[in-house]
Image 1 (cartoon, rainbow, N blue to C red):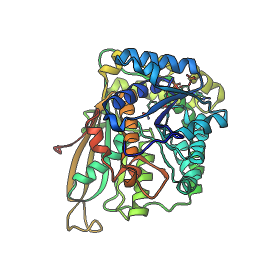
Image 2 (image 1 turned 180 degrees about the vertical axis):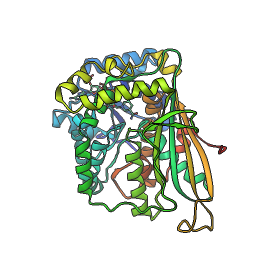
Image 3 (image 1 turned 90 degrees about the vertical axis):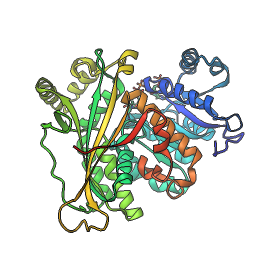
Image 4 (image 1 turned 120 degrees about the horizontal axis):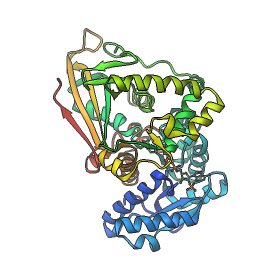
Length: 430
Ligand SMILES: NC(=O)c1ccc[n+]([C@@H]2O[C@H](COP(=O)([O-])OP(=O)(O)OC[C@H]3O[C@@H](n4cnc5c(N)ncnc54)[C@H](OP(=O)(O)O)[C@@H]3O)[C@@H](O)[C@H]2O)c1
């Protein structure tokens, strides 16, 4: 590890929320990466959460699954609770990087960001909640910059494939890339795919509170980004995508918000030409459209009322048609699921002025990976943490709150991900 630990700050990485559904996968991935690191610069890590006993059980389970008995004896446990400020401060004083897996972030995230900034630990999370991500930027960017701390949210499936996928597309494009449409496709085996309850809860509360996101954005007081090149027309709410050969709808996750923040950062800090981004997700055939329409209407109606939210969060499986469950996906579902995110970009060839005429060059790229929620996500956050530890000098300024691309665009994160279950490639344009 290029970043050195000390006796008073003995861990490169602390996994906070290690007992969670996702946290347990992060523990295993960090253990694997630590075992691969050379002896002289061994990755030192610890787990943290509110129950010492449950954390011990997680280490025992990981030690059995990975055949690494040393995990039970060598890995330290730090007890920390979001509601006890002092416990967070003590945790943050011991680590160079905190991987925060405690969500929903709108309820539990801010005290962890605050403790990291105040106690000099870099902060990474796998949040997919635009309200939280944007509010942290508004409230902590200057403080984090002053303290020399990096706060980098959305380092999971939300939104590393999209944010770095556009960086990859731009690198491959010869000229000025001005617009990209992203199409997400998730495929699963006969057992289907599903997500864990915490993500469903984040979505329910996020949609319920979408009005506050508009208010929050006004507080930034930003002018709209200039549109470079031809303005991209948004597709309809449901349309048949010939690119995906199935019906598609606009993608409602955090990717568009994260990419937009990245584009603003690159425009304002590095004077780069902004790329327009629109994101869609494939939903399948006509039957899926009808199911989604009925389910969506019910969801929109129910999130507006506290009783509706109570029902939605109490019965996730029923109201999400089995897409989210309290027990999370099974091992078989995880093994048989994968994603592809295909980007169709357009722009102007070298020497052509984007202010004149129509785009004259196209590109198609793809990011593919293993199961998005718990395999790709875990790979992404762990590689992001290792990149931060090894290439700190390549991150912007000396600290601050950033999107993944804004933080890592001058590092080797894409190359690291290529070796760890997220692959970037150029495709032929049909
Ligand atoms: N970006 C992505 O693609 C992606 C993918 C997966 C998950 N996520 C997000 O990651 C978050 C976690 O998801 P999950 O499914 O792993 O959730 P989970 O299984 O419910 O785990 C939540 C974790 O938070 C801990 N926790 C709760 N309250 C706490 C407190 N007061 N103090 C300390 N720790 C506390 C829990 O500890 P206990 O064991 O003590 O209860 C547990 O470790 C969610 O926000 C989810 O949306 C994002």
